[in-house]
Length: 74
Image (cartoon, rainbow, N blue to C red; front, top):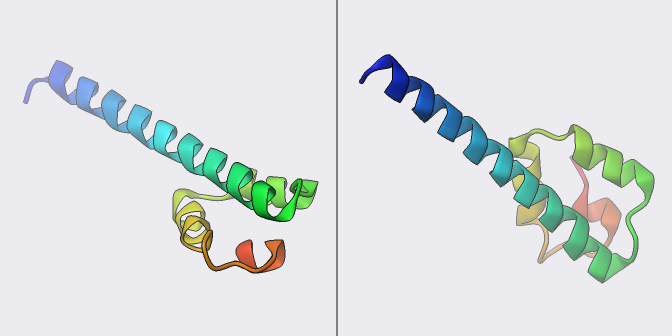
């Protein structure tokens, strides 16, 4: 693989990861809000500071959480 191809691949991977993370963030703000009402600021702050793995764990809870506290448990 040439240097240009490696740089292109790295750029693609970074762009994909950023888009994926942004999509998860949107999911985690819209769906719980539709079920439980507007998200309090401290939950939005948790989302802002979460890594991809944490976002994934929260996405997995979308269908089973009975409260925002259940949903955002670490």
